[in-house]
Length: 192
Ligand code: SF4
Ligand code: SF4
Image 1 (cartoon, rainbow, N blue to C red):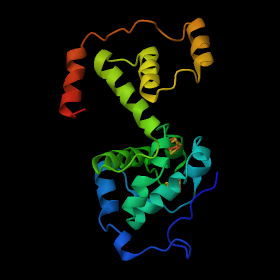
Image 2 (image 1 turned 60 degrees about the vertical axis):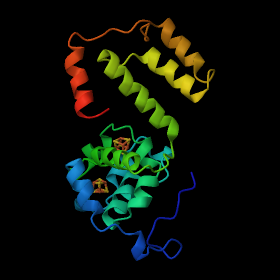
Image 3 (image 1 turned 180 degrees about the horizontal axis):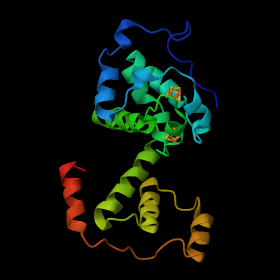
Image 4 (image 1 turned 180 degrees about the vertical axis):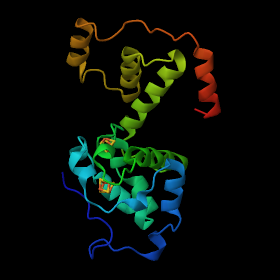
């Protein structure tokens, strides 16, 4: 993948107007972890199983946060490609919760109305959340069907879906947890 030139070089200079001075502090407050502890050893990026699908690596995202380059951090694809697997955090010598930083940046991008560079990933996240809200569990078949409807893409991955059905990896009917009312209170509290 052709990756963008990161800010700070002669090809992509930083100007004062690009910088949001309290950005790193805000990310720290919201994520509960400190991006400023990162010294760019790249262990996170080297270990990330999804790095090849990202425009910039996890440590580059943290660099943008450190520099206060809010707009660039909120517009990169890496924050959406990250699946929150925590492989990076387990490699990080500074015990930075990189996944929490990615999560915070996704939330901030949505709040600021920034165009999501990976809209299909957002659609998938939304369908998973809706399933959890309805049943307290992720009903995979319904999630995939609803996602496909929204994406208007009926045929891709159908072979995988059929194989999963044949192997009984997909439940046809959803099952609901007993205390679904308690769970729904969380969604109301978090305004989801
Ligand atoms: S592993 Fe930790 S210290 Fe190293 S680059 Fe990644 S976030 Fe920074
Ligand atoms: S949590 Fe995100 S950034 Fe970290 S290894 Fe997993 S996919 Fe990569």
